[in-house]
Amino acid sequence: TVAVVGSLNEDVLVRVGRLPGRGETVVGRDTVLAPGGKGANQAAAAGRLGGGVAMVGRVGDDPAAGRQLAALTAAGVDVSAVHRTPGALTGTATIPVEDGSGENLIVVVPGANAELGPGDVDVAAVRDARVVLLQLEVPLETVQAAAGTARGTVVLTPAPPQPLPAGLLARVDVLVPNEHELVQLAGARPAERTPAELAALARDLAAGTVVVTLGARGALLVPDGGPALLQPPPPVTAVDTTGAGDAFCGALAVALAAGTAPAGAVAAAVTAAALSTTGAGARGALPDAAAVQAALPG
Ligand code: ADP
Image (cartoon, rainbow, N blue to C red; front, top):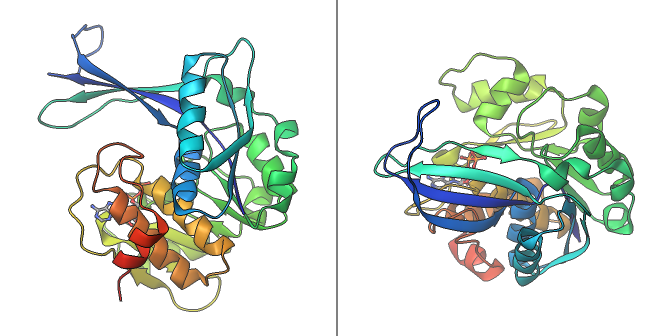
């Protein structure tokens, strides 16, 4: 089984003719409410692939909570360890998207996610999971507690990027940054880098296995020992890459929980994430296991 400990948000998407400047008001349209949050997106991706997924987190005491729980349940996720928090609001991400350019702004309000405490993660779902998936949208002490409670494989997406305590890195078995997050964690400057250069940065983190996601280029598996391996995606027509990294992590966790070796798990994750970009929204085109199998390269 897979346990996901992390954030649940409601995304509030609005279209605007032009993004507002400081102090400016613009009129938007077409408000769309969509379930989001890195944790919940990863859980939904894993749930859609099957194989027993439990979410651990906090939502508010509001209608958004019901929408999020219904969406996760529909994706096959066990939400019995997602607690409603009296007096709190479900976390939100408010996202105006500009017509034409597609450029956006994002304001995240953690809400109930900030109330997820170390005591919430000391549960059987986390202790007994073969894979525990973590991100950084809930308090860091809670992420550390979850890593300490886990007896299975610990997978961490270091997003949003922030300095990581050595004790946490030591307990992480698989770190999954995108290129930007890897550069931040390594304290390097942004630059065009070859896969070999990225692998060197990843090895400097001394974080066990590192899997660097590279957008349309796929992902780079950097094992603890042995050569790095670049896994390109199958050909797809990407229409919306929002949540691609979350689809990647969910699929990686399901494959690792099934006992798949790292190279095979990365191939499955690259394929699932590529397929997820073919529909709109963070959870728009999450594939099931048969779709991933059919699209696997080679
Ligand atoms: P994030 O969404 O966290 O920024 P990436 O952009 O690296 O992460 O994307 C994560 C994964 O999604 C990639 O490793 C790849 O498998 C898939 N992906 C993202 N963008 C594309 C694309 N344009 N074409 C095919 N696959 C993509």
